[in-house]
Image (cartoon, rainbow, N blue to C red; front, side, top):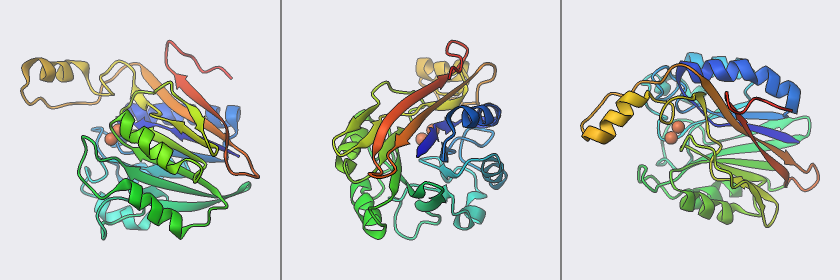
Length: 264
Ligand SMILES: [Fe+2]
Ligand SMILES: [Fe+2]
């Protein structure tokens, strides 16, 4: 059983890059489930629209996760409840629209995907740890369970990973847009990486035009950010799970850009 998790897709270039590489990635790695973080997939790099949700699902993405930019496009409220495979973090306050986990049937068995968000340097929403317990209480433990933990700090991500270790198949971090090199298998067979990385502009600051971001740091004045153009990158992880134990056998980083071509 293989899960291909692709990091935050940023803007039009991110979507184009994803759609260009996805068929090749599918041929090369034959994933059973493809999960993509879509919180930056709208043209301006914030949120997601109905058309983009449809486009990604039609392209062969099985589940889309979100994060702190979930509500950035006003139209999200018109469709989030009806898209079962579009997840928003589960620890938003009770009554928040949308779904936070989904159980998919795959040829290799049932797989539940869960989306949670950290609270360090992000909104002070409900506790992601207790929310995970609540969700795990609602589902059968005898299945593949995969978490996208959208968080800023490596310490909160590692803490969540240790908290979930032995209880889920794998947990990966998103949000920082920079892939970390700390992939490992925790005791109990839970695969982990602090951040998957992003998809989109290679020559930007986390996907945004460098001039504007640099200007903001230098001047400390408000500056409008725009998605960068030019060369592209795609970051992902391939997680191989044992069909019997539902635990991680192998977690492999995938990094594609001009300096790192796709090699099988
Ligand atoms: Fe992001
Ligand atoms: Fe984020």
